[in-house]
Every structure is written in C-alpha cells, then in structure tokens.
Length: 161
Image (cartoon, rainbow, N blue to C red; front, side, top):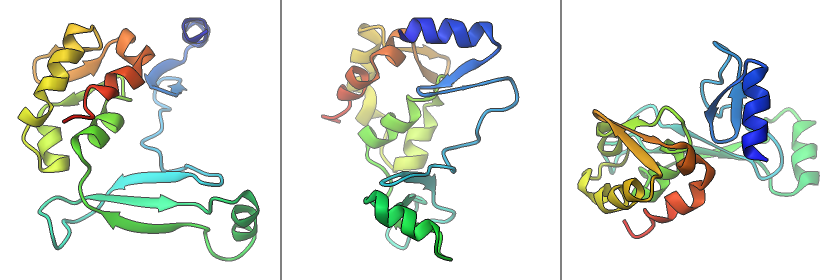
C-alpha cells in the first residue's frame, strides 16, 4: 500500500520528504509547528541553552488529552497549549526525529542537539547499514527506502544506545 501511495502521489507531483509527509515542490512544511488535536505534541529546538546544559534542549508543547477538554480550550481565549523546555534528547529520541526525514542529517548534528559523542550511535548505525536501513553519503546519514518502510525496526537499533 505504501509503494502504491508513493507512486500515485509522485505521479501527481508530490515528493515524499518525511515519513508521513508529501508536498509539491517549494511547499514543504518547515517543521511540525501546526500539530493540532487532542493529545498532540509539538517538538521544537529551544531558542537558548538551559541553565543545566550548553545545549538548547527541546520545547514540548502538548494539547489536552481529552477531546472534550481540547475542544473546550479551543473555544476559550487561551491557545490550549502548555509548554516546557526539556533536557536535550537522548540518542534514540534524536534518531526518531532525524531519521523521519528523507534528507537525513549530518553527523555533527547528533552532538549539537544531544551533547552526546557520535560514538554513542555508532553500533546502531553499523547495524542499520548492515540491514540496508541507512546510507552514508560523505558526512550525511540518510534512511533508505527500506529504512523508511521499516522505521520502527530501524529505531529499535538505537534503544540500547
């Protein structure tokens, strides 16, 4: 079914740029800033380092879990969002977000976003390459089509990291 969807959308001019996102050229979303609905969570890099870390961390905005509470909040003046800055992501959390993007990520980004050395991910990356889930192009790691189709299995390789 996934191959069929990708082929139909591709024929209609849509590019598959992220696990669950397709767009026509120059119309991609810049990020998941428009997440809506009950229990929705939006993640974004914090604008400045936290007091306990030289890394910015992650701002998590959450919506009320109950559909009734979410709808009630939307009809009030508040935005029905609550947010907090969390510590930098772990290696598995970073990989969960970075490997959703077909463009992949440069090696340096792991340390920049998590404060962890790249070596912390090497075992998982080696297994991912051996299983055909990722490719390495210079300094950039990208999920393969197989890696995108089996994203959960790919991400499981980093849970021990």
